[in-house]
Length: 116
Length: 348
Image (cartoon, rainbow over all chains, first blue to last red; front, side, top):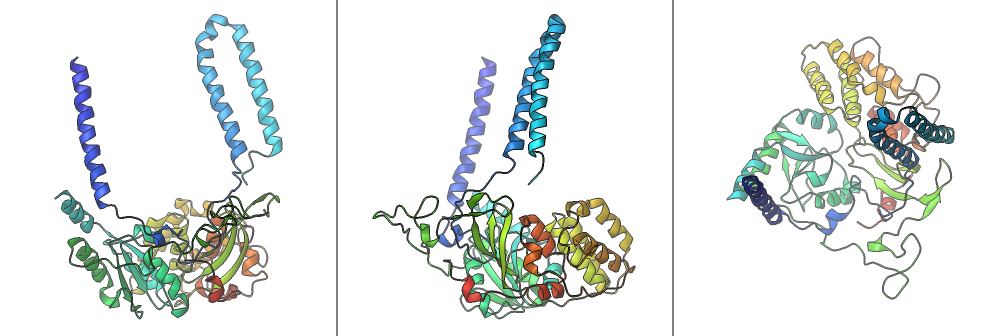
Protein backbone atom coordinates (compact mmCIF):
# COMPACT_ATOMS: atom_id res chain seq x y z
CA UNK A 1 0.00 0.00 0.00
CA UNK A 2 2.70 2.57 0.84
CA UNK A 3 4.27 1.78 -2.55
CA UNK A 4 0.97 2.54 -4.27
CA UNK A 5 0.70 5.85 -2.44
CA UNK A 6 4.22 6.77 -3.49
CA UNK A 7 3.43 5.93 -7.12
CA UNK A 8 0.21 7.96 -7.03
CA UNK A 9 2.04 10.89 -5.44
CA UNK A 10 4.70 10.84 -8.14
CA UNK A 11 2.00 10.58 -10.81
CA UNK A 12 0.21 13.56 -9.31
CA UNK A 13 3.39 15.68 -9.26
CA UNK A 14 4.20 14.69 -12.86
CA UNK A 15 0.64 15.48 -13.91
CA UNK A 16 0.71 18.94 -12.30
CA UNK A 17 4.03 19.79 -13.98
CA UNK A 18 2.84 18.47 -17.34
CA UNK A 19 -0.41 20.42 -17.13
CA UNK A 20 1.49 23.61 -16.21
CA UNK A 21 3.85 23.23 -19.17
CA UNK A 22 0.94 22.45 -21.49
CA UNK A 23 -1.00 25.49 -20.25
CA UNK A 24 2.01 27.77 -20.76
CA UNK A 25 2.64 26.45 -24.24
CA UNK A 26 -1.01 26.89 -25.20
CA UNK A 27 -1.00 30.43 -23.87
CA UNK A 28 2.24 31.45 -25.58
CA UNK A 29 1.69 29.77 -28.95
CA UNK A 30 0.61 32.12 -31.67
CA UNK A 31 -1.25 30.65 -34.63
CA UNK A 32 0.90 29.87 -37.65
CA UNK A 33 0.12 32.29 -40.43
CA UNK A 34 -0.26 31.34 -44.09
CA UNK A 35 3.11 32.89 -45.11
CA UNK A 36 4.75 30.83 -42.34
CA UNK A 37 3.24 27.63 -43.74
CA UNK A 38 5.18 28.01 -46.99
CA UNK A 39 8.23 25.71 -46.98
CA UNK A 40 11.44 27.65 -46.33
CA UNK A 41 13.73 27.39 -49.33
CA UNK A 42 15.77 30.53 -48.72
CA UNK A 43 13.34 33.16 -49.97
CA UNK A 44 12.49 31.32 -53.17
CA UNK A 45 9.21 29.60 -53.85
CA UNK A 46 8.31 25.96 -54.47
CA UNK A 47 6.69 25.37 -57.84
CA UNK A 48 5.03 22.09 -56.91
CA UNK A 49 3.29 20.85 -53.80
CA UNK A 50 5.61 19.23 -51.25
CA UNK A 51 3.35 16.19 -50.95
CA UNK A 52 5.06 13.68 -53.22
CA UNK A 53 6.23 10.11 -53.63
CA UNK A 54 9.91 9.36 -53.52
CA UNK A 55 11.83 6.14 -53.45
CA UNK A 56 13.07 5.02 -50.04
CA UNK A 57 16.25 3.57 -51.45
CA UNK A 58 17.48 2.12 -48.19
CA UNK A 59 14.39 -0.06 -47.69
CA UNK A 60 16.04 -3.33 -48.75
CA UNK A 61 18.93 -2.73 -46.36
CA UNK A 62 16.36 -1.96 -43.65
CA UNK A 63 14.49 -5.20 -44.27
CA UNK A 64 17.72 -7.16 -44.00
CA UNK A 65 18.55 -5.38 -40.75
CA UNK A 66 15.15 -6.25 -39.29
CA UNK A 67 15.53 -9.92 -40.23
CA UNK A 68 18.81 -10.05 -38.30
CA UNK A 69 17.19 -8.34 -35.36
CA UNK A 70 14.68 -11.19 -35.35
CA UNK A 71 17.51 -13.68 -35.58
CA UNK A 72 18.94 -12.34 -32.33
CA UNK A 73 15.53 -12.70 -30.73
CA UNK A 74 15.59 -16.41 -31.56
CA UNK A 75 19.12 -16.81 -30.30
CA UNK A 76 18.40 -15.79 -26.71
CA UNK A 77 15.91 -18.62 -25.94
CA UNK A 78 18.09 -20.98 -27.98
CA UNK A 79 21.07 -20.17 -25.76
CA UNK A 80 18.99 -21.07 -22.69
CA UNK A 81 18.11 -24.58 -23.92
CA UNK A 82 21.38 -25.24 -25.77
CA UNK A 83 23.04 -27.13 -22.90
CA UNK A 84 20.03 -29.39 -22.43
CA UNK A 85 19.43 -30.10 -26.11
CA UNK A 86 23.10 -30.40 -27.13
CA UNK A 87 23.98 -31.25 -30.73
CA UNK A 88 20.37 -31.17 -31.88
CA UNK A 89 20.09 -27.48 -30.97
CA UNK A 90 23.44 -26.83 -32.58
CA UNK A 91 22.29 -28.35 -35.89
CA UNK A 92 19.00 -26.47 -35.83
CA UNK A 93 20.70 -23.16 -35.28
CA UNK A 94 23.22 -24.02 -37.99
CA UNK A 95 20.39 -24.62 -40.46
CA UNK A 96 18.72 -21.39 -39.45
CA UNK A 97 21.91 -19.36 -39.90
CA UNK A 98 22.63 -21.04 -43.23
CA UNK A 99 19.26 -20.01 -44.60
CA UNK A 100 19.82 -16.47 -43.35
CA UNK A 101 23.32 -16.42 -44.88
CA UNK A 102 21.92 -17.41 -48.26
CA UNK A 103 19.61 -14.41 -47.92
CA UNK A 104 22.57 -12.17 -47.21
CA UNK A 105 24.52 -13.49 -50.19
CA UNK A 106 21.51 -12.97 -52.42
CA UNK A 107 21.02 -9.43 -51.10
CA UNK A 108 24.72 -8.73 -51.56
CA UNK A 109 24.54 -9.89 -55.19
CA UNK A 110 21.50 -7.66 -55.74
CA UNK A 111 23.43 -4.67 -54.37
CA UNK A 112 21.41 -3.93 -51.24
CA UNK A 113 24.54 -2.93 -49.32
CA UNK A 114 25.43 -0.33 -51.93
CA UNK A 115 24.20 3.03 -50.73
CA UNK A 116 22.38 4.87 -53.49
CA UNK B 1 3.92 35.79 -13.61
CA UNK B 2 5.28 32.59 -15.04
CA UNK B 3 5.09 34.12 -18.49
CA UNK B 4 7.02 37.21 -17.35
CA UNK B 5 9.67 34.96 -15.85
CA UNK B 6 9.89 32.94 -19.08
CA UNK B 7 10.09 36.16 -21.12
CA UNK B 8 12.94 37.44 -18.95
CA UNK B 9 14.69 34.11 -19.33
CA UNK B 10 14.29 34.22 -23.12
CA UNK B 11 15.52 37.81 -23.29
CA UNK B 12 18.69 36.87 -21.39
CA UNK B 13 19.52 34.15 -23.94
CA UNK B 14 21.67 34.66 -27.04
CA UNK B 15 19.62 36.38 -29.72
CA UNK B 16 18.50 34.00 -32.49
CA UNK B 17 19.29 35.93 -35.66
CA UNK B 18 18.60 35.01 -39.26
CA UNK B 19 21.26 36.82 -41.30
CA UNK B 20 20.49 37.97 -44.83
CA UNK B 21 23.84 38.72 -46.43
CA UNK B 22 23.98 41.13 -49.36
CA UNK B 23 26.77 42.70 -51.41
CA UNK B 24 30.08 42.80 -49.52
CA UNK B 25 28.40 41.77 -46.28
CA UNK B 26 29.74 38.25 -45.80
CA UNK B 27 32.92 39.03 -43.87
CA UNK B 28 31.03 41.49 -41.64
CA UNK B 29 28.40 38.84 -40.90
CA UNK B 30 31.03 36.26 -40.00
CA UNK B 31 32.82 38.69 -37.70
CA UNK B 32 29.54 39.71 -36.09
CA UNK B 33 28.63 36.16 -35.10
CA UNK B 34 31.84 35.79 -33.11
CA UNK B 35 29.91 37.80 -30.51
CA UNK B 36 28.47 35.23 -28.05
CA UNK B 37 25.36 37.37 -27.56
CA UNK B 38 24.23 36.51 -31.10
CA UNK B 39 23.31 33.10 -32.45
CA UNK B 40 22.84 32.50 -36.18
CA UNK B 41 19.91 30.19 -36.88
CA UNK B 42 19.31 28.05 -39.96
CA UNK B 43 15.76 29.13 -40.74
CA UNK B 44 13.55 32.18 -40.15
CA UNK B 45 11.16 30.14 -37.98
CA UNK B 46 13.96 29.83 -35.40
CA UNK B 47 14.77 33.55 -35.49
CA UNK B 48 13.46 36.62 -33.71
CA UNK B 49 15.63 39.15 -35.51
CA UNK B 50 16.13 39.44 -39.25
CA UNK B 51 19.45 41.12 -39.90
CA UNK B 52 20.16 42.41 -43.40
CA UNK B 53 23.87 43.01 -43.96
CA UNK B 54 24.63 44.74 -47.25
CA UNK B 55 22.48 45.68 -50.21
CA UNK B 56 20.36 42.89 -51.62
CA UNK B 57 18.94 44.92 -54.52
CA UNK B 58 15.41 45.58 -55.68
CA UNK B 59 15.22 42.41 -57.78
CA UNK B 60 15.29 40.25 -54.67
CA UNK B 61 12.95 42.42 -52.64
CA UNK B 62 10.03 40.04 -53.06
CA UNK B 63 12.08 37.11 -51.72
CA UNK B 64 13.20 39.20 -48.75
CA UNK B 65 9.64 40.21 -47.92
CA UNK B 66 8.55 36.57 -48.09
CA UNK B 67 11.37 35.67 -45.72
CA UNK B 68 10.32 38.43 -43.31
CA UNK B 69 6.83 36.98 -42.97
CA UNK B 70 8.26 33.56 -42.14
CA UNK B 71 9.89 34.82 -38.92
CA UNK B 72 8.11 33.94 -35.70
CA UNK B 73 6.48 36.62 -33.59
CA UNK B 74 7.68 38.76 -31.88
CA UNK B 75 10.15 39.79 -34.54
CA UNK B 76 12.26 42.75 -35.60
CA UNK B 77 14.33 43.63 -38.65
CA UNK B 78 17.57 45.59 -38.69
CA UNK B 79 19.32 46.82 -41.82
CA UNK B 80 23.05 47.38 -41.75
CA UNK B 81 24.88 48.97 -44.72
CA UNK B 82 21.63 48.74 -46.66
CA UNK B 83 18.66 50.98 -47.40
CA UNK B 84 15.71 49.68 -45.34
CA UNK B 85 12.47 48.59 -46.95
CA UNK B 86 9.87 51.24 -46.03
CA UNK B 87 7.46 48.53 -44.83
CA UNK B 88 9.60 46.86 -42.19
CA UNK B 89 12.66 47.29 -40.03
CA UNK B 90 15.03 50.14 -39.34
CA UNK B 91 18.62 51.00 -40.19
CA UNK B 92 21.51 50.56 -37.80
CA UNK B 93 25.15 51.56 -37.85
CA UNK B 94 27.67 48.88 -38.68
CA UNK B 95 29.78 49.89 -35.68
CA UNK B 96 27.13 48.92 -33.13
CA UNK B 97 25.12 46.26 -34.95
CA UNK B 98 25.47 43.64 -32.20
CA UNK B 99 24.31 46.10 -29.52
CA UNK B 100 21.37 47.16 -31.69
CA UNK B 101 20.31 43.53 -32.25
CA UNK B 102 20.45 42.73 -28.52
CA UNK B 103 18.58 45.90 -27.63
CA UNK B 104 15.83 45.23 -30.17
CA UNK B 105 15.43 41.65 -28.91
CA UNK B 106 15.22 42.64 -25.26
CA UNK B 107 12.86 45.51 -26.03
CA UNK B 108 10.47 43.10 -27.73
CA UNK B 109 10.39 40.79 -24.73
CA UNK B 110 10.08 43.69 -22.31
CA UNK B 111 7.04 44.92 -24.22
CA UNK B 112 8.70 48.20 -25.16
CA UNK B 113 8.69 47.35 -28.87
CA UNK B 114 5.90 45.84 -30.92
CA UNK B 115 6.40 42.92 -33.23
CA UNK B 116 6.50 43.70 -36.94
CA UNK B 117 3.25 42.73 -38.66
CA UNK B 118 3.04 40.51 -41.74
CA UNK B 119 3.43 42.14 -45.12
CA UNK B 120 1.44 39.51 -46.98
CA UNK B 121 -2.18 38.79 -46.09
CA UNK B 122 -2.86 35.85 -43.83
CA UNK B 123 -4.62 33.75 -46.47
CA UNK B 124 -3.63 31.00 -48.90
CA UNK B 125 -2.07 32.34 -52.10
CA UNK B 126 -4.74 30.57 -54.14
CA UNK B 127 -7.85 28.52 -53.61
CA UNK B 128 -7.75 24.79 -54.01
CA UNK B 129 -8.64 24.17 -57.61
CA UNK B 130 -9.52 20.86 -59.18
CA UNK B 131 -11.50 19.60 -62.11
CA UNK B 132 -14.52 18.54 -60.11
CA UNK B 133 -17.25 20.78 -58.79
CA UNK B 134 -15.92 20.38 -55.26
CA UNK B 135 -12.29 20.95 -56.18
CA UNK B 136 -11.53 17.28 -56.50
CA UNK B 137 -9.80 15.42 -59.32
CA UNK B 138 -7.23 16.45 -61.85
CA UNK B 139 -3.73 15.32 -62.75
CA UNK B 140 -0.98 14.28 -60.34
CA UNK B 141 -0.98 12.08 -57.27
CA UNK B 142 -4.18 13.31 -55.68
CA UNK B 143 -5.32 15.73 -58.34
CA UNK B 144 -6.25 19.34 -58.02
CA UNK B 145 -4.06 22.37 -57.50
CA UNK B 146 -3.83 22.80 -53.75
CA UNK B 147 -3.35 26.47 -52.95
CA UNK B 148 -2.01 27.30 -56.38
CA UNK B 149 0.72 24.66 -56.43
CA UNK B 150 0.20 21.70 -58.71
CA UNK B 151 0.78 18.26 -57.28
CA UNK B 152 4.11 16.73 -58.28
CA UNK B 153 4.06 14.70 -61.48
CA UNK B 154 6.19 11.68 -62.23
CA UNK B 155 9.46 11.97 -64.10
CA UNK B 156 12.38 9.70 -64.96
CA UNK B 157 14.98 9.39 -62.22
CA UNK B 158 18.47 9.99 -63.60
CA UNK B 159 19.89 7.06 -61.64
CA UNK B 160 17.66 4.21 -62.74
CA UNK B 161 14.73 5.66 -64.67
CA UNK B 162 12.20 4.98 -61.92
CA UNK B 163 9.07 7.03 -62.52
CA UNK B 164 8.72 9.01 -59.31
CA UNK B 165 7.52 12.48 -58.37
CA UNK B 166 9.79 15.40 -59.18
CA UNK B 167 9.89 18.39 -56.81
CA UNK B 168 10.79 21.74 -58.33
CA UNK B 169 11.60 24.87 -56.34
CA UNK B 170 13.78 27.94 -56.40
CA UNK B 171 16.35 27.50 -53.63
CA UNK B 172 17.94 30.70 -52.39
CA UNK B 173 18.93 33.49 -52.64
CA UNK B 174 19.05 33.59 -48.83
CA UNK B 175 19.53 29.91 -48.04
CA UNK B 176 22.24 29.57 -45.35
CA UNK B 177 23.73 26.49 -47.03
CA UNK B 178 24.30 28.41 -50.26
CA UNK B 179 26.68 31.29 -50.86
CA UNK B 180 24.74 34.55 -50.30
CA UNK B 181 22.66 35.66 -53.27
CA UNK B 182 22.85 32.39 -55.16
CA UNK B 183 19.42 31.20 -56.28
CA UNK B 184 19.02 27.96 -58.17
CA UNK B 185 15.97 26.48 -59.87
CA UNK B 186 16.30 22.84 -58.89
CA UNK B 187 14.24 19.75 -59.65
CA UNK B 188 14.75 17.02 -57.07
CA UNK B 189 13.78 13.38 -56.91
CA UNK B 190 14.24 12.48 -53.28
CA UNK B 191 17.64 14.00 -52.53
CA UNK B 192 19.02 13.65 -56.05
CA UNK B 193 19.29 16.71 -58.27
CA UNK B 194 17.68 16.00 -61.63
CA UNK B 195 17.82 19.46 -63.20
CA UNK B 196 19.36 22.77 -62.18
CA UNK B 197 19.67 26.27 -63.58
CA UNK B 198 20.92 29.52 -62.10
CA UNK B 199 18.33 32.21 -61.50
CA UNK B 200 20.54 34.61 -59.53
CA UNK B 201 24.33 34.57 -59.14
CA UNK B 202 26.05 35.04 -55.78
CA UNK B 203 26.47 38.62 -54.56
CA UNK B 204 29.82 40.27 -55.04
CA UNK B 205 32.00 39.97 -51.95
CA UNK B 206 35.37 41.46 -51.23
CA UNK B 207 37.35 38.45 -52.39
CA UNK B 208 40.62 38.05 -50.64
CA UNK B 209 43.05 35.50 -52.05
CA UNK B 210 45.45 35.88 -49.14
CA UNK B 211 45.87 33.63 -46.12
CA UNK B 212 42.92 35.17 -44.33
CA UNK B 213 40.70 34.72 -47.37
CA UNK B 214 41.57 31.02 -47.42
CA UNK B 215 40.79 30.74 -43.72
CA UNK B 216 37.36 32.27 -44.31
CA UNK B 217 36.72 29.94 -47.26
CA UNK B 218 37.60 26.97 -45.08
CA UNK B 219 35.30 28.24 -42.34
CA UNK B 220 32.37 28.47 -44.78
CA UNK B 221 32.96 24.90 -45.92
CA UNK B 222 33.34 23.65 -42.35
CA UNK B 223 30.02 25.19 -41.41
CA UNK B 224 28.13 23.29 -44.11
CA UNK B 225 30.03 20.14 -43.17
CA UNK B 226 28.55 20.45 -39.69
CA UNK B 227 31.62 21.60 -37.77
CA UNK B 228 30.53 25.11 -36.72
CA UNK B 229 32.78 25.36 -33.65
CA UNK B 230 35.90 24.81 -35.74
CA UNK B 231 34.52 27.19 -38.38
CA UNK B 232 34.27 29.88 -35.68
CA UNK B 233 37.93 29.23 -34.76
CA UNK B 234 38.94 29.76 -38.38
CA UNK B 235 36.97 33.01 -38.56
CA UNK B 236 38.49 34.21 -35.29
CA UNK B 237 41.96 33.37 -36.64
CA UNK B 238 41.29 35.26 -39.88
CA UNK B 239 40.10 38.27 -37.92
CA UNK B 240 43.15 38.20 -35.67
CA UNK B 241 45.46 38.07 -38.68
CA UNK B 242 43.57 40.94 -40.33
CA UNK B 243 44.05 42.98 -37.16
CA UNK B 244 47.81 42.39 -37.36
CA UNK B 245 48.03 39.64 -34.76
CA UNK B 246 49.86 36.35 -35.04
CA UNK B 247 48.47 32.88 -34.82
CA UNK B 248 49.83 29.33 -35.02
CA UNK B 249 48.12 28.05 -38.14
CA UNK B 250 49.65 24.59 -37.78
CA UNK B 251 47.46 24.09 -34.71
CA UNK B 252 44.38 25.02 -36.75
CA UNK B 253 45.45 22.73 -39.58
CA UNK B 254 45.83 19.86 -37.10
CA UNK B 255 42.37 20.63 -35.69
CA UNK B 256 41.05 20.48 -39.25
CA UNK B 257 42.64 17.07 -39.80
CA UNK B 258 41.33 15.72 -36.51
CA UNK B 259 37.80 17.03 -37.18
CA UNK B 260 37.44 14.43 -39.93
CA UNK B 261 36.05 17.09 -42.27
CA UNK B 262 38.12 15.80 -45.17
CA UNK B 263 36.59 12.35 -44.77
CA UNK B 264 33.07 13.74 -45.08
CA UNK B 265 33.91 14.98 -48.56
CA UNK B 266 33.59 12.15 -51.10
CA UNK B 267 36.70 11.62 -53.19
CA UNK B 268 36.66 13.03 -56.72
CA UNK B 269 33.62 15.19 -55.88
CA UNK B 270 33.14 18.36 -57.92
CA UNK B 271 36.07 17.56 -60.17
CA UNK B 272 36.54 19.57 -63.31
CA UNK B 273 39.30 20.02 -65.81
CA UNK B 274 41.43 17.00 -65.00
CA UNK B 275 42.98 15.17 -62.09
CA UNK B 276 43.55 16.89 -58.77
CA UNK B 277 40.88 19.53 -59.23
CA UNK B 278 38.17 18.12 -57.01
CA UNK B 279 36.81 19.52 -53.74
CA UNK B 280 39.45 17.81 -51.61
CA UNK B 281 42.26 19.31 -53.67
CA UNK B 282 40.72 22.78 -53.41
CA UNK B 283 40.47 22.37 -49.63
CA UNK B 284 44.10 21.23 -49.43
CA UNK B 285 45.11 24.27 -51.50
CA UNK B 286 43.28 26.60 -49.08
CA UNK B 287 45.01 24.94 -46.13
CA UNK B 288 48.40 25.33 -47.82
CA UNK B 289 47.76 28.98 -48.72
CA UNK B 290 46.67 29.69 -45.13
CA UNK B 291 49.90 28.17 -43.82
CA UNK B 292 52.00 30.06 -46.36
CA UNK B 293 53.12 26.90 -48.16
CA UNK B 294 51.45 27.71 -51.47
CA UNK B 295 50.79 30.85 -53.48
CA UNK B 296 47.18 31.58 -54.46
CA UNK B 297 46.55 30.63 -58.07
CA UNK B 298 43.57 31.51 -60.24
CA UNK B 299 41.12 28.67 -60.74
CA UNK B 300 41.36 28.93 -64.53
CA UNK B 301 38.66 28.38 -67.05
CA UNK B 302 36.67 25.28 -66.06
CA UNK B 303 36.11 22.62 -68.67
CA UNK B 304 32.63 21.95 -67.30
CA UNK B 305 29.70 24.26 -66.73
CA UNK B 306 28.19 24.77 -63.30
CA UNK B 307 25.15 22.71 -64.29
CA UNK B 308 27.37 19.75 -65.27
CA UNK B 309 29.11 19.97 -61.90
CA UNK B 310 25.93 19.80 -59.84
CA UNK B 311 23.48 17.77 -61.92
CA UNK B 312 23.03 14.20 -60.70
CA UNK B 313 24.58 14.87 -57.28
CA UNK B 314 22.83 14.30 -54.02
CA UNK B 315 21.80 17.41 -52.15
CA UNK B 316 24.61 17.27 -49.56
CA UNK B 317 27.21 16.75 -52.28
CA UNK B 318 25.93 19.73 -54.25
CA UNK B 319 26.10 21.95 -51.15
CA UNK B 320 29.71 20.90 -50.55
CA UNK B 321 30.61 21.62 -54.18
CA UNK B 322 29.00 25.07 -54.04
CA UNK B 323 30.99 25.97 -50.95
CA UNK B 324 34.27 24.69 -52.34
CA UNK B 325 34.74 27.73 -54.58
CA UNK B 326 35.62 31.25 -53.54
CA UNK B 327 33.14 33.95 -54.45
CA UNK B 328 34.81 35.10 -57.67
CA UNK B 329 35.25 31.57 -58.99
CA UNK B 330 31.64 30.72 -58.26
CA UNK B 331 30.40 33.87 -59.98
CA UNK B 332 32.40 32.90 -63.07
CA UNK B 333 30.84 29.45 -63.00
CA UNK B 334 27.27 30.72 -62.62
CA UNK B 335 25.93 32.23 -65.81
CA UNK B 336 22.37 33.36 -65.19
CA UNK B 337 19.96 31.38 -67.33
CA UNK B 338 16.66 32.62 -65.93
CA UNK B 339 15.56 36.13 -65.16
CA UNK B 340 14.28 36.96 -61.73
CA UNK B 341 10.79 37.51 -63.08
CA UNK B 342 10.68 33.93 -64.31
CA UNK B 343 11.55 32.57 -60.90
CA UNK B 344 8.67 34.41 -59.33
CA UNK B 345 5.93 32.78 -61.35
CA UNK B 346 5.16 30.46 -58.44
CA UNK B 347 2.78 31.59 -55.71
CA UNK B 348 4.13 33.05 -52.49
